[in-house]
Length: 422
Ligand code: AMP
Ligand code: GLY
Image 1 (tube, rainbow, N blue to C red):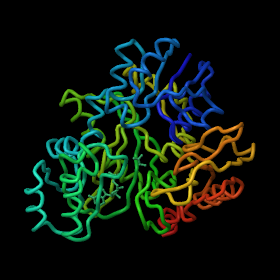
Image 2: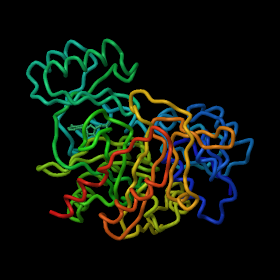
Image 3: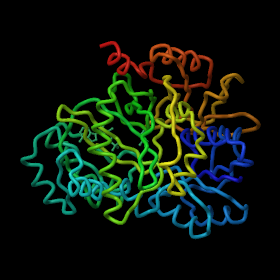
Image 4: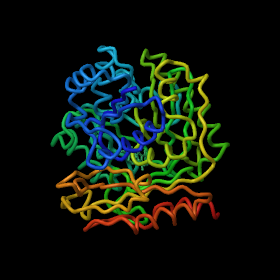
């Protein structure tokens, strides 16, 4: 079976490593992949947003199955285009990917179907948004409607900061068209949990829960990033919480999407906050999270390809999906200066025995060497019996990997550990 994976980050590397375990798989192509993924797949220099190029490649190379991993090609209709060419796919159609592609759509969906989320108003007129902020309590959260590379959410501590955020989105177009519509919402507090799920639009199977670390600095300080590390499971996500989420969030969301004629098949990611009033949705993603995938998939005991095909064929209810009872931790090693500016081109050395633990995100091949090529360079995952020993094992591996100007947080999992020890 010839498989194509669209994307080129650590998440895609984790998906590819998992797919490779299936003996039916003869070849995996990554479009575009990266210098590290090249160890596990044939990387082809076609961008993830070059939907026509992806379709042509799939047809010309007799691809049997495609996994579209990143948000932007999903929202832009990559699955629709591939399916039109007769290629079976894992991932939602554009109509369903809108649940991530438009925050206004997602919020209105939750309101209409009574799914718990932060109270909000939507605006397409800047002056009305500014008037609203005069009396809104702070902190307040300002969100650009569309995709914004994870940067379209601003938590404003003061009225002035909130107004600046609105002006930068709506007038200065900091996120282009994504900021033409905005959501202004209530600031919530509580532990955050990421729950990725498989769904075929009928059945929803949550994967093991996880916890992301989004800020660049230790103790969750500094700028937001694409994610600096993850642990799974998330200790705040108890069985009781899981049950409430299934009844009030997961199933209602699947049903709501069906009602709207936007049936979702693929990986639906629930970004949750466990508030004192119960779990609420912070965001939906129409795809696997990064770097959540780098801790969730290593704990998947079932065969990923079998599960994905069951999703595609609408027979997820008959497909067993099981996760290990162990823990996983992933530490992201980044280039110093990320997420603002950083240098590239430093040689990366990874001991042979760690090849299976490393998911490469931003690296290229240069004269036979792997060199840094992005802000987040790679993720290092360890698996263990307790959270504490798993975190230690991940850092022990990090110590053995080298590139100049490497930066990583030393407190990945520390908050989770506190929750366990409580
Ligand atoms: P997002 O880009 O949608 O993943 O949001 C980035 C982060 O902003 C989330 O992980 C939360 O930590 C935070 N956030 C988003 N919405 C809210 C909210 N209503 N209240 C508090 N924090 C929020
Ligand atoms: N880790 C959060 C995301 O993938 O959006």
